[in-house]
Image: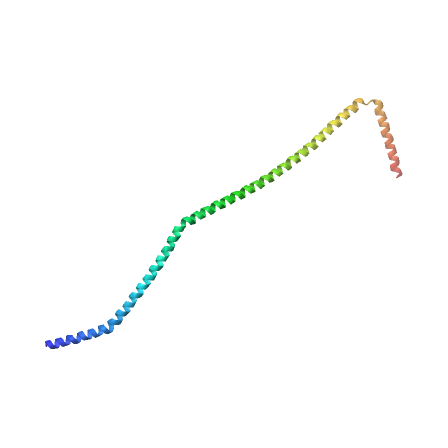
Length: 161
């Protein structure tokens, strides 16, 4: 009986060994391939991550220079805007000055005309006073007679025409 037990055990061990060799070989080979693929993918992912990290570090290293370039650009734009505003202000001031000069010259001309009119009015009034003071009744009669004669001659010429 012990021989049969040992024979039974040998058959069972041989069957299990056969199945292990038949099934375990391809399983372990497939598993080995999966592990290699996983390692290769992990290596690719690691290289990609390192490349991205290096790119980010490079950008971070250049960020100071980029910020300084932006600041410089902003300063230049502010200076250009200031120059533009100064030039525009100067143009506006020139326009205002020209307008003021025109207004002043117009006011001066108006004042000169008013002064001439006032002077003429004073001269006429003075002349009237002098004429009234120097005119005698005989002079007045002679002027009236001369005026009447002129009117009469004008009426004759107007009716004949």
